[in-house]
Amino acid sequence: MKKGVQQIFSQIVPTYELINHLLTWGLDIHWRRRAARLAGSRQGSCWLDICTGTGEMAFNIAKVWAKNISHKDAKSNKLGKNSPSRISSGLSSLRLTTDERRKKNNSKGHLQSFRSIPALVVGLDFCWEMLHQARRSKTSRMALPLVFIQADVRHLPFAAGALAGVSISFATRNLGLNPETLLPFFREIYRVLRPGGLFINLETSQPRPAWLRQLFHTYVRFAVNSLGRKISGSKVGYAYLASTIPRFLSPEELSEVLQL
Image (cartoon, rainbow, N blue to C red; front, side, top):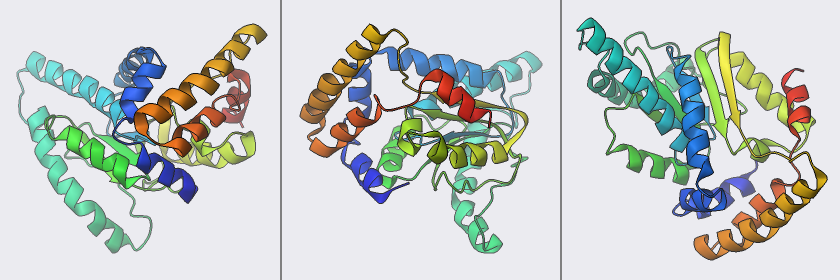
């Protein structure tokens, strides 16, 4: 991804989620929770949330997974290796050894399956400032099976077929605005998914009726740009975001790209 985009996101970290909530009238909270419940139905060895930003989607998925683990443990009276607190302690060593694995492999640092951790959510982003905020938020939620890493979505640091699922929320349009630029990213996602794995893409789209589409674009042009700029203090950040939303693909066009 372009360095300019990385710089834009580094400038809007403190108010990023607040502005998302305001601009969507709080609907983004409901959408993420709904997506997280869907991810919970495919709970497995590892789930990746790419372009995780401040980690809201990753937190939602990790909460569902932790709840599922606790429920299963309570049902079977086994509060041992699968308990969220045990998983959390395992993540500390995982966080420390990720860089060591990269040095050892002398390559992308593939994160193979971690058999000692029954369920793990990984939040991945290229923006250190966003990840710093996500990690700060996690300090009050240490029991969650969740870790954050910095990496490039063009070269995901996972072995082929390693993941139960991949999610991305409100960031696909930052990867590309046309099929040609999006296709390499989707192929990389497909590479790391195991057979039967799930890909969740939560994104704004183009309303079908022309009048509604025009109204939506007007709202984006004025509300996203002006409100985002006033709250965040970044003139460039929300001007960029407001410019990408009306130019993104329709649901039908995006569906075609995913099937290529």
